[in-house]
Image 1 (spheres, rainbow, N blue to C red):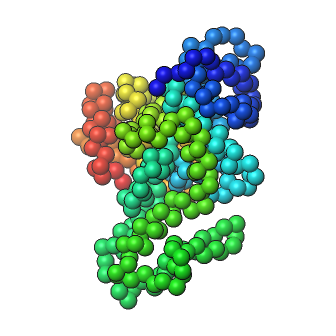
Image 2 (image 1 turned 60 degrees about the vertical axis):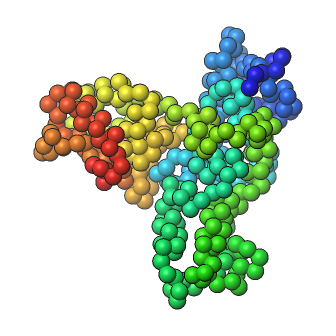
Image 3 (image 1 turned 120 degrees about the horizontal axis):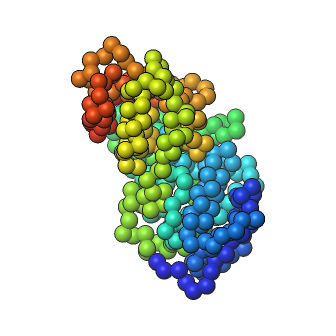
Length: 367
């Protein structure tokens, strides 16, 4: 995709980047947004050869995708992928803002930039107009995935008394949603359970967000028409939109809790040496090994959450386990964002053992 002749000029202040960008972008025609992007921050000198536009998108995405604004929410407390917030309607202009978010996604992709924030796999599949399957639900709602998988694999005759309807709590009121016309009167049986699961999965991802998603998709497709997306699968689209999540090692180090060690402990110094030596992908994999997610909250490492149900942040923790044999691999406790590090005798051994643990994450040395 090549920019059209002319320029798409934006001048915004850093302090009002969300609202000013919204007003400017929503006034534009789609063809103007395909012109060469030229961004200027008010009160700052400098020509934009790509760096200013990249910084603008980085700062803007941290604002517009922040769950505090109510347009999006984290898919789980301990997983920092984003999904549309079903309760975004508390802002009466929310559909216009979702149209703006879609346009911003489109601008980023068209001009070859990435956004700071990742969405759920089903979100990318929806943008590609691909059906959502039961497998997609596992990373977003593991409990529901287990329940529906059990239903498919078991004989439910005489066990399940559900109907083709779902009860949902909306602002304190219990609302019944029928999965198909007359669903409240149709019992789920061994014969129709597959249809029920398919409808339930679709409901789980589209519950209360149909209008928001359509507004976002409209904005995105104004810049990136559907036919240009056909060669992509959801994983490729995720990389195009979000890239590999950039991890700030200084922020990581400054917001790490130490147990039975200090910042000057040799193994702690070696640990950060290894992290510095890793590629972006390996840093993301190490983070996923210890916390269960390869992404950092938009507020940085200080806002990491555990998955124990405890209120408030649970910082990344290095625990030096002095009584553990050094032939053991490091061990991760994802509920507590903690890595247990044996007292390795030298840098190379620590590097080798840590790398082996990260690369064998599939259930090995993880608790």
